[in-house]
Length: 217
Image (cartoon, rainbow, N blue to C red; front, side):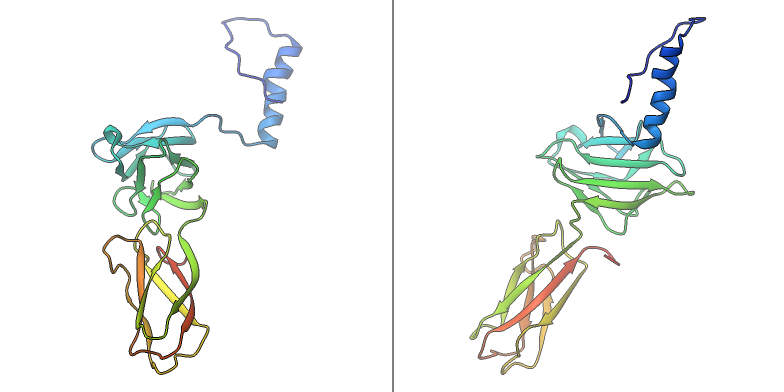
């Protein structure tokens, strides 16, 4: 069991019970458990910067904006691990890849207080992505272009336009000879991609799909 830290005064005599509770037992606890405590609040400044003061933080947007970019995290050195989440359910923090010291492979959207990102600081002072939870960089599903149609728009559920979309046919193409992703953002809203066949297939064409953000996910 963890014992809350105690502030000692100069030349105070410590008993064996106090030493055991505050030093020995807490050292054993730390070896067996990792407990970061409550998240410290950081607010993005006008330049897109925050400075970490501990390992676990919630991040709020500049002047409570609905969405704000986080470009640089200060106060870190090689080997430091940070766990971040959004502070407010209605305000989205966007961790921007490759602009400041964030090296993530893709922009990451903290759009929920239950969405977390884990980062580690490398030798150059850049923060590399270790994990996201829940993992939202990839989505998959199934689609159908019905007979008489030549395209369908698929809602992918990702927080932005996918980098890649792969498809696997689960039926024949019928009268069509080609099927392809014709537009990754047909409505310019980042919510759907479009799959097209060259002509009316004259039967339903079914396929499985996988979309993801970034490379190697």
